[in-house]
Image (cartoon, rainbow, N blue to C red; front, side, top):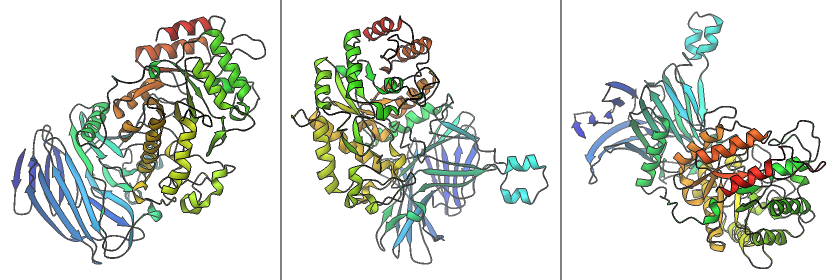
Length: 600
């Protein structure tokens, strides 16, 4: 790197990027093409916004010095008229830049947002990418054209345009990484900006104590880029106490490939020791064998076409969750035994539990689930139980324990409370006994071998206060819970399997397999999701989830995709028609499936 220090500016240039930092702002350029990529009007690149308060930072000062590690460190300080103090740090490494900030309020405050870069920042990029699975699309991410907004509403109002142009110009981009569709959650606080083959990455190194990275842009101008810390439910900071923003990576790639930039991001996290490196050499053999999941057959055997993944459109039966019982499970196990399907795992899906939140076998529908799990073990298979950790139905007994609930039982946007898993009492009296009950082989326990997780972080909202502030935030809460349950699973079952649903690098160490999700999708859409998982979760195995088995051709394509892309296979259909005894996918299906499974 080349470093030049002027009277009022610090310039750092290298092969990958060039920056100029001064009291007047921050400029990032691409030294290869000579483009300015963005410039701000302030060098305070990370700054807090208090609830119901506009922070006016003044007395901005800049100081630079080399670090012992070979980086250039630029310190920028500022204050408000009320006495709040802010110190932001820009550390220029050869391959990337790291932003950090510490804030000390003069009085008690609540941080509503941590703003990145600057409002009304000039942005010379064409597209922005972020990760939110899109149903009915091949993409496992979203891409937005930064110029589609054209002009702000104020600019349009001051000009004369045809109405159709006004509609186009006022179409502002407004996106967030916060979860709201229950899939692949929580998502990493990461966005990629693209100009031709140049990729500009902005991603959190630390897990934010917040609820998504938000962006608003129009007419080539970045109007805001910020970590949402809860808006009116912002994070409390006591007077005189220092609070830190999430350390944030900023880097350039010149290959124009979003997946390679994701790999770059994850490798930085691993290099800095934020996420582990995992090897697949010593994994238990049973994880590699195909799995059978009861969910599709639950829908088929309950005659319910409202649930996808089975053929027919004239079914009017029961809810597959309520229809699932010990008799149905025994029937499915009989089929596995009779057809000699060589599965390694049976996933007992939704319906085995008393209620979501009360993770005990349903007393009427599953009076002796341990006996059935013992049968699965005797068949040389392992038993994995479906569990939705953040879903709590109103009739769950645990919802009556108000002392265990966030805010005493405050409801989130889905009308459900949240158990405060950060509370040590909840961990001692609920989580630890639950893990023993699920995984121990003692006579009064289930002796299950793992969990299939579902409905992850969409239920974690800013309205939920937590006992331990370190758990605050969508990403932090979900990862802290899963890490705790993962440790307890391994305590009781050293080869226990956590089948997760989070394409997020900080989950690498607390899940073993990640599934592509059993949602209505094209078969090839699972390939895109698998690529997303592999890039964000190197070291975790990828399992192709249940397919829409509406024809024999669908099943063949699903199996072919699993083979070609080296994906673990999860099968959802083994039951014949309960009325005719014939298999709706054809008489050749059982033998075909048996041969394919043996090929594993």
